[in-house]
Amino acid sequence: MALPNKASQLLPKGVVDVKYERIPCKYPGHDTLTVKVTEQSRFAEYLSVVVLYQGGQYDVLGIQIYDGSVKQWKDMRNAYGAVYDLPNPPKGTISLRLKLKNIASGGAVKIVKLDNVIPRYWKAGVAYDSKIKLA
Image 1 (cartoon, rainbow, N blue to C red):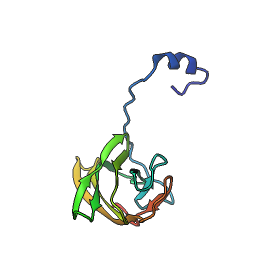
Image 2: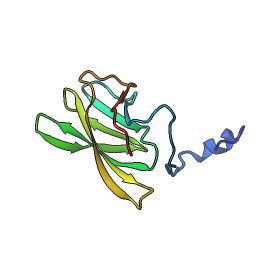
Image 3: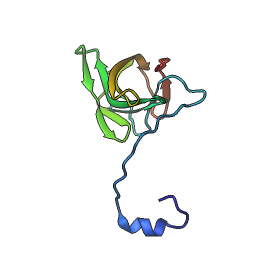
Image 4: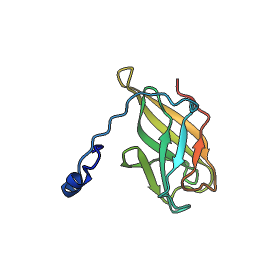
């Protein structure tokens, strides 16, 4: 797919299945979990997020969002790849709970809570730092 001048051979194939596999890595200068509100998000109607800089040895298995109006955690849908979404997100600042799998330790699972990681008046395309480092 990355070969120069080969697009004309790939295009007729239409949609192709692609398997993604995360490789443990480090991001110099970025050592805390960051949540990016994707460009597809529409304030107060639709929230779509991706977790950035989890680095190292963790895969995101799921994301939950806290709905303070009913005092419960709601699962976000894994829309595609690493993107999670939810129509009609809760109002106010947003807390998330991440379910992470440690790929280096045989798949041990841990939950990480990101309190008030997304501000009340969030904007599409903006990344918000959680200040949380994964060990």
